[in-house]
Image 1: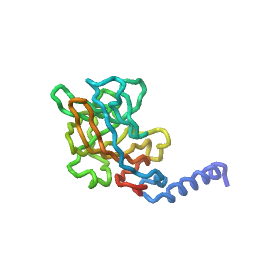
Image 2: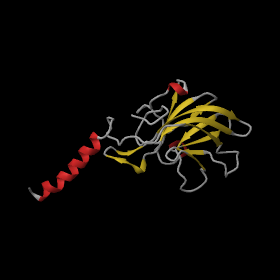
Image 3: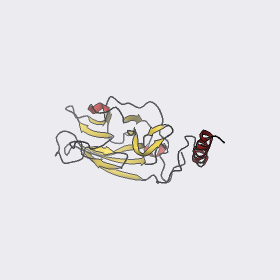
Image 4: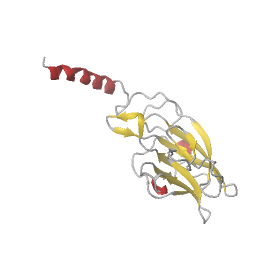
Length: 191
């Protein structure tokens, strides 16, 4: 056996083991993190205290302050001069074009899988109470790099309340923390 063939054999076995051990078409490792429904409250980018979180980081599922240099987030909330409640992607704030958003005309519970296409990156989304929307996170480089490249997280959100006076929005959400998985149902996803 030549040296090249000898070196290729273990790598090929690793790829075969990796792809056959997965019960999904993307050859992702089995999901281990259960999807849960949570609630977050964001404060408007303008007109609120600077130390209040206006952003949400889907990769860590935590609130983010947009005033901190290097703080990572995938979406942010604001109320514009016309009183419209807006959800911003990173690109719509003039940052890297990575996260994306999509409105849904379905009920929160009825959205069970995130679509792959038709997300908006450049323009903010106007929302109101009961609005449902989907967000595709920025691709993650920590533990989320596979044969297909860097993979995002997917999540669904519903506006529970919107307070123009305190400039806050409360969102019900389900974010799938398993890299590249699009299932938006409670429990450990299979897709």
